[in-house]
Length: 186
Ligand code: URA
Ligand code: SF4
Image (cartoon, rainbow, N blue to C red; front, side, top):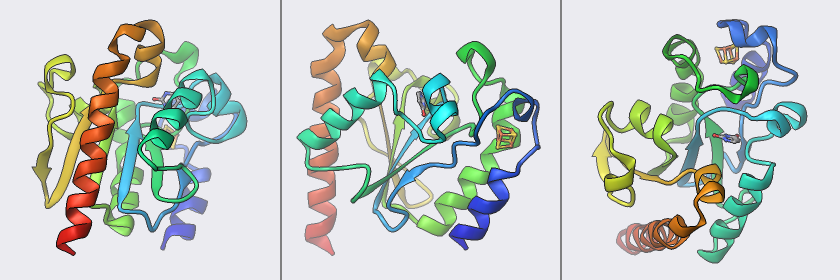
């Protein structure tokens, strides 16, 4: 079950990132939620606090969530492709992603979310398709194993490039509409 999985994950040494981490960042939110958000991997603040998206990018993410009536405490769950911080925030290596992805697969199997939102290119390429072009294909829903999957721009990318914020906001509106649509059918 969920707590056993978390317990095991917090002790994981399946890849080299275990050597340099402070905390394993398992995830945050409501494991009974219908919507899951997946980032790339913990940064410095996340590594120190053991929680995903707690830096400046996290603040922006929380605002965007709030604007469509979602919150990390209540109706979503947030996790990452790799659960330990890559040194100097480099991209996680493919072998690290491969070593770690089973934790996420198990999280998804237990949660059975209806919608998965990939935050940024790395998560989108890993979970949606290897040739994902996030600049063109963000905001589009793909169905995979009966789960609706969509990618949006990474909050850190929006901080670097604020002119992309309206496009990302559109994605969150599409997400809101999709959630409402699913709940109407149910
Ligand atoms: N960036 C990510 O992709 N994930 C985090 O948890 C924090 C920053
Ligand atoms: Fe284990 Fe993932 Fe951390 Fe590697 S990144 S040590 S696989 S939890």
